[in-house]
Image 1: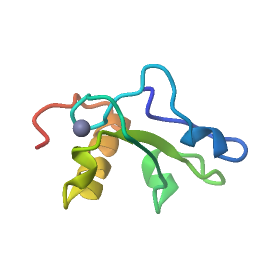
Image 2: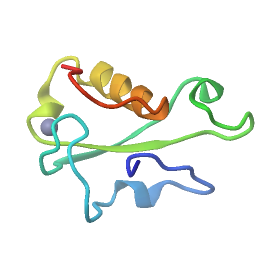
Image 3: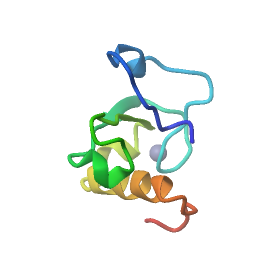
Image 4: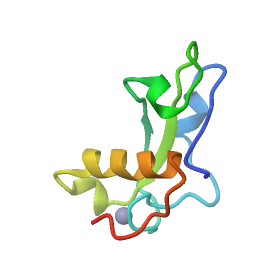
Length: 89
Ligand SMILES: [Zn+2]
């Protein structure tokens, strides 16, 4: 669950690499760090008055995929729902 963050302030620290980071899609070393901001926080189990930011990393190969945003959202949604992450591609 290291790709999820509940924030109470700015998110500048989200864009810094951390030990244990890995590509959200394939698990390789990350090349890009992104922050996913759900359009409807309440649909993502966030409190009504709080925005939820979800940090994720992608490797240099996965970030080039044309449908990577949809894939990222699919994986993050699955993680939030507690589902196992398998065979999403
Ligand atoms: Zn990857």
